[in-house]
Every structure is written in C-alpha cells, then in structure tokens.
Amino acid sequence: MPRLNFTGRRRIAQDHVKISLTNDNGQHFFSARMSLETYGFPATAAVIVEAYRQLELSRFEFGTVTRPIPPPNCRLTEFGTLDGVRFRVKVVSNDEPRGQLLGVADRIHPTDVALDRTRRIPLINVKGHDLGREVWKLDFSDEPILLVNYRMANKHTLVRSPMFQSLVLPEVLRSILTRILLVDEFRYFEDEDDWAARWLRFASSFPGAGEVPEDADAEMDAEWIDSAVSAFCQWRGTDRLFRDFWRDSELGT
Image (cartoon, rainbow, N blue to C red; front, side, top):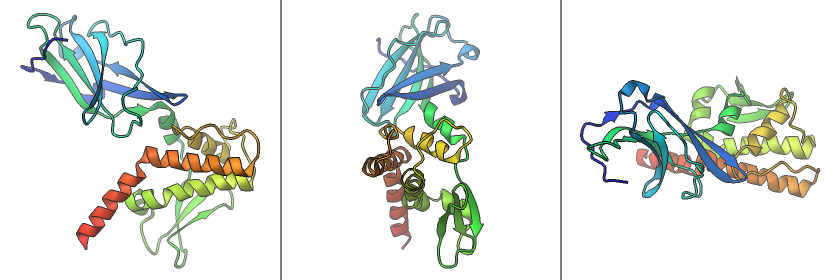
C-alpha cells in the first residue's frame, strides 16, 4: 500500500456507512455496506475498511468505489473482546497521485446483529410504584416488571443512570434467569410470544454466554446463569460505567 497523501480529502458521512458484527462460535466477523456514489470519487479508487482500538489495527481491502468487493475473510482476530473497537472507511486513489486519501469516515460504531435484534424487543416494563423504603423491586405476578419507587426517583432517569445500570441491571438479569430456569424450570425459547423465551434468547445471544443447558440440572443452570450475567456485563461495560460513576461521585464530594 503506497503512502497516503491527505491533501483534499472529503469527509464521508457516517450514515453512508454501516458496519455490522456477527458472532459464530465465539469468532467475531463484520460486514460493511457503503454508499459512496454521491461523492464523485474516481471509479478505480480503492476502498479500505480499518478496525482499530488504540494501537491495535486490522485493515481490509474492499475493492473499488464502483466494484466494492469484500475480502473472503472479515474475521476480527486481533482484538480479543470487541469492547471499544471502532471502524473507519478510507477511499484511496489508485491513479496519479497514487495513494492520495480522497475520503474518510472515522469513529464508526458497529452494530451487533444478534444484539440489535434483541434490543428491539421490550423485554421488561418499568413502572413507578410506592415501595416504601425500597428503591426498586422485581414483580413476578405475571411476566416480570421492574418497579421503581416513584417517591425517590423518576423511573426513566434512574434506570438509565450509570449507577443503576452497573449495580442493578446485572442482578435484574440474574433474578429473571433464576426464576425461569431454577424456579419455573422453563427452557424452551422457540415461542416468539413467551416472555421467558425472549429472555433466554436475549441472554444466550451475548458472546461467551453459551447455549442454555438442554436438561434441567440446578448446578449446570446456575453456572450458565453466571456465564450469561458475566457476558452481559462484558457487553454492557458495567465495570467502566461504575468506574466513571464512582470517579464522578468522588470528584463531587
């Protein structure tokens, strides 16, 4: 690859680039869709997609502007976990002056195909309720409802706060999975309309969670629940959320 010349480059809008992640047996892959027709780039200009995190970098050649051909293997092998990985797209001249950077889109946040599907499902309703001295509570009268004490906080503000998401949401997930597998002994998630099936699909979609145990076994179920909660925390970055919350709390004292 020739040295890049940055003179006269154009900024590619991020909504003209879509990067999607998939997970296959613990291996991470990505796909890229780009709309570059309106920028007037030369037809022969090369399209390059880079995945990066701090000093880590993987580069993939995606053909040319008019013939965007993805490489045979878009596997992300350099990063371990994908926390903090971002993408950039570069359009580089293949004509003279060869290597000139014609356009770039940077700091692209990828979307996870499996998780994006589950995020569209409202897994749990949040309702304000008078809970006395309790801040929050799970109600299992029917499908689970997250009750928030309206005397103490606005339910939406509290649930979206880094403190709540780092300290409470993992336990909400653990409690619901425990109810499904160890109390109700439910483990069939083919039914699209069943709330327990939705939660099992959601929890098993996280990289590292593994498949729900096929047979009822309290010890194996408990181990899987731990794995699912750990995978959720890794995906959500609960340690980072808590560190930021705690640092800001200490600075405010």
